[in-house]
Image (cartoon, rainbow, N blue to C red):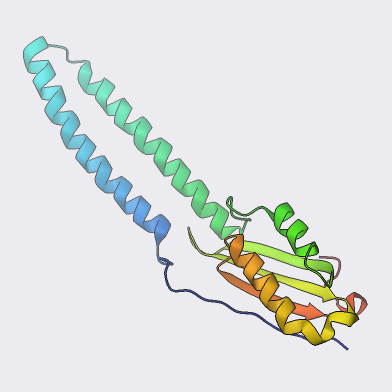
Length: 171
C-alpha cells in the first residue's frame, strides 16, 4: 500500500508576474531612448564634421544591441513555455543529495520547471525503506528542505514504500 504525502511550500517573496514581459517593455523603452540619443549625437557629429555616414552606423549599433537583447529574452521565454529545467538547478546534484537522505531507497518521477523567470516548481516520488515508514514526516521535511536549498520554491513530494506499485517508476 502506498502512502501519499504532498509537501507544498509557497513563498510570496518573489515576483511571478510578467518578468519577460517587463524585459520586453524595458527593451522597447530603451530602444526609444537610444534612438533619441543617436539622433542628438548624429546631428552634432554631422553638424561639426559633415560625416553623414554616422547616422547609419549609430542606427546599426542600436539595432544590433536591441536585436541581441530581444533574442535573449525570446530564448528565455521559450525555455519557460517548453518547461525546461532552470539553469540554476542541477538535477544530478539534487538527485545525488536526495539519495543520501537516510531511509531513501529511490527517487523517481523527478521534474523541475520554471513558471516564470524566477519561480521554480519541482515534484518527485521518494521510495522510503519500510523501516523508516514511521518517520515519513521527518523524511518529507528533509526532502522539501533539500529541494528548497536547490532553489525549488514550490516542491511537491510523494512518499512511497513500494516502487513497484507506482505507475510512474519509468519516468
